[in-house]
Length: 71
Length: 172
Image (spheres, chains in turn yellow, purple):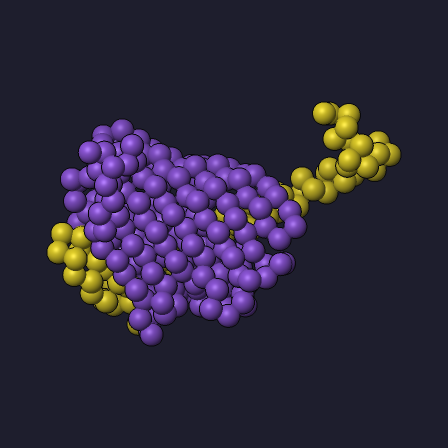
């Protein structure tokens, strides 16, 4: 059973307790959301990189040359 | 302006690992909070394969952030109003015994306005190809005073010797 460490800041006492079924479900939901968010962000970054490479190829210039144009 | 730093509590994960570290009943008697985290995860992956997930008052909603980062041989900036993760945590594939070190600064945590907070972090794994440094500016659009902070990982557990210390700061 997964455990968590809880520190009561009013007393300074730390205790290790087993997660409840509800907490496990929340943990799994947060993990799934984090994974989905990260995957979406990675896909968006990959798409932007591909679009950028395609545009540079169409223009026939390098990334450094594009930076010079925009600088 | 920080005038005093007082350690409120510290946690060191034991040999069995832990899925989360929670600070509860945080007193409202300080002006700011500072959390220092040294952590490593058990999941498969390298220096920045997995992320910490933070909750305030058990809430992970209404969050947004911007990040400036450098990793290996590249840099990037990004932002999100939906992603709830914050900060890379080295996992089992990273250099042995390497931990991420993060500092979170949460000003006016007990106030009734939205909470902005910052993260300054380094994932130094003694490797020239598997590292990350980043700064993040976060906003929690919630007017509640922060009375608890929870830290989990998006996969796996915190390994032994992961440490979190919460400080309270007063301006006088």
